[in-house]
Length: 362
Ligand SMILES: Nc1ncnc2c1ncn2[C@@H]1O[C@H](COP(=O)(O)OP(=O)(O)O)[C@@H](O)[C@H]1O
Ligand SMILES: [Mg+2]
Image 1 (spheres, protein in one colour):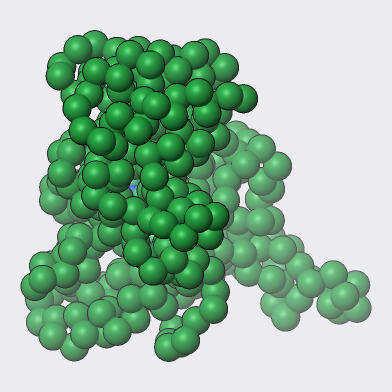
Image 2 (cartoon, rainbow, N blue to C red):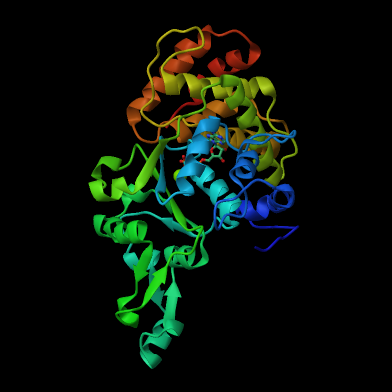
């Protein structure tokens, strides 16, 4: 694990970003640890859910974190399922960073994913000159996780071809990966600490398409959007503030602007407006992650375009690109929301939002 104090990477991995916090937890961690783990379950939980004055890195039920950790300490793999933008990837990154100190053994699922990208490939120059030797083998994330006793992450697992998914079966049940090119006996046995966290979006090709055999090797955990409005507001503010600082913007948008933004997202997601009236839900996922990125964009617009902290009309400018991605009808719904629902609300920020509705053109 490499600690870097000044880091110009746009997004350092969690083990770098929270290096000092993880080290401090390690030093004081007296609770028992599962074999191969760097921290106890209690310390992992503190890392993710905060405590001692530190805010939570993930807003979710404690029981979700507990079940996720318990799964990872058994021989079952963990599958996090949910709508896009509910922090599934972030949760898997934080768990991996805390449990094994490395969150970058990551496979990105997709239609073109092949087995050599998850297990091992070859250095072609060496393969040609000396044939398939251990030296010529280039380990891919699963190989490295197994031999190092680490957590591998498999993002969007349901998007990858069935034969790649099938390739996981023997690894997850027998905890061994055969390397037939190196001989009949060549195998990588998983070291203690090895396990897999996969994520899947409910909007993508379904979890139902996974084979029954593979499903059986996972425990499924559903990750829900943040239930409490105040917690979501606080998170959006905190995250936007961090992102804005990295973008050179000193202060996040004012609270009333952020409140309007978070309310819009919550209402369009749930289909109920602030006074309990049913409204049309958008088909696009109005996730917390999208709300954070709109808050970020609002701050950037304000600071760099005008020298202020972002205004309600910036919300309108940003909403179309964030909210109406999947479906042109969403744009019409959004327009009706701004016209009717925002118009009925009290407060300067809502009034300004309503007044800016004409900016919603695509
Ligand atoms: N419950 C939550 N706790 C913390 N951050 C959240 C939560 N829900 C959404 N976010 C925001 O979403 C971002 C992560 O989204 P991501 O992990 O990519 O979602 P997913 O993988 O579910 O699509 C976080 O950086 C954070 O800004
Ligand atoms: Mg994700």
